[in-house]
Length: 184
Image 1: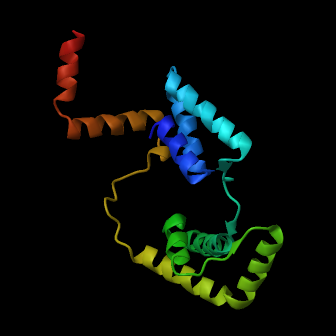
Image 2 (image 1 turned 45 degrees about the horizontal axis):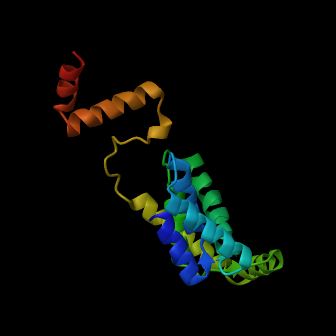
Image 3 (image 1 turned 90 degrees about the horizontal axis):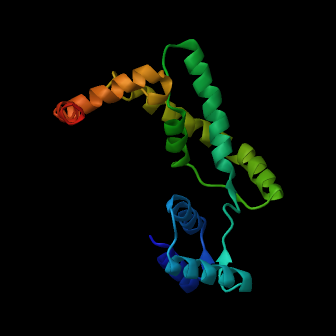
């Protein structure tokens, strides 16, 4: 989306969302030079922000306390399983599975978050443990597709180059042959 369209949308809605702000920043960071129209749009946006015609929405005004409760439970259970077996579990998948089956507990203040934590510990701890347990069971039962795949971040630079080269050879077998001809 262009700066002009983002500004137009912000003026129409009366709000500049964090996503819109990030996109404007990305465009400004990657562009070698902005056009007159882009500068004029940014000037219009600044004026609208200063007058209150457009309000910048803060990045995050709330938290879901359930996320930290589920993560705490999942980390403890996953660590126990990984310490006593040779299995490696995906904490993100486990947390997402459990969170999708639990009620959200949003708070906008520290006092609200404390209240939600206490309420969850009293009323929902059993349900949290049950859902995390189900998520772990599903993760353990999941078949291991493509066991030869490795995360890029776990390898050294030379191994990454070898993997990328193998991928290129698999998906573009004639690429190297053509590039060799152009460099000679």
